[in-house]
Image (cartoon, rainbow, N blue to C red; front, side, top):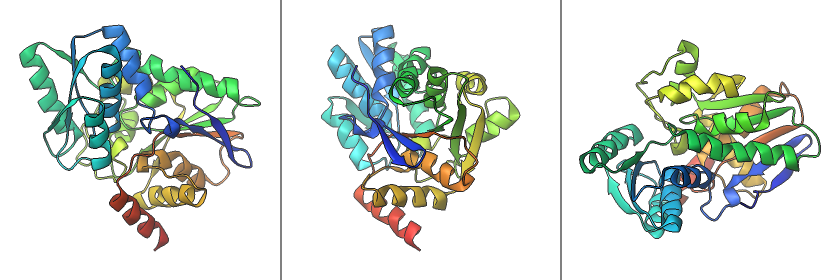
Amino acid sequence: MTPTPLERFADGVWLKREDVHELGAFKWRGAEAVLDARRPDVVVTASTGNHGAATAWAAKRAGVRAVVFVPEGASATKTALIEANGAELRQAGADVDEAKEAAREFADRRRWFFFEDGAEPAQFEGYEAIGREILEQLERAPGTVVIPVGNGALAIGVGRGVGAGPLRVGVVPAAAPVMWESWEAGAALVSGSAATFADGLAVRVAIPVAVEELPRSVDRLVLVTERELAEGVAAYRDAGIRVEGAAAAPLAALQKLCGELPAPVVLIVTGRNIDDDLYARVLATAAN
């Protein structure tokens, strides 16, 4: 496994560039680890896009049939990646959690393996490698590592990988707050909203194992608004880096906290797969 690069972004700020992988996102690490552990003949999953593309990619490499459910209106950029990697694509439901229900039922009827993104222990282990790479690549120990939180799997893995030394900060969209609400309640909850343009973080139903594991791997959660996310996308654009909404969350948190985080700070840049029209609208929002 070739490490993704760690690049200096600003004084005391570094970027872990998961977006430079051929799939444009970090999800391949978890998908590959799960299929290696489970070794199914067929894998069924649900996704807003990046996880589905990663599952398709890992399945193709392993010679496994993949069926990926996405919500209606899912990103065209991401669904094209799913199909380009050989998976059967199905649309179901208004959001990823409804797509997940359809995918689980489909897999159960056929007794096929259902890969629930965020619920597989091997997935957490796959993401631990990101944290270990940070420790190996940085010139000195990080003061803070900032990680987007959708279903929580990435934050759990990276948090485990870097260990308890740095401050480990998870970032949740205020418009898709279920992981924040679950963190506060100490139990997996269902939220009434997942209306963020950061589709990789648009989770409405928390996964119990992730809610249980997250406090062991993350020290603090931060909420960011849609405007703050848009400003993060624009700030990366100004630095010559195209990112999707989820990838902008750590930079949005850094800008919001204004020097509160111990340096050096490492931001996880999770992915670049954003549709052109959405990217234009997000940049326009940031500019107004």
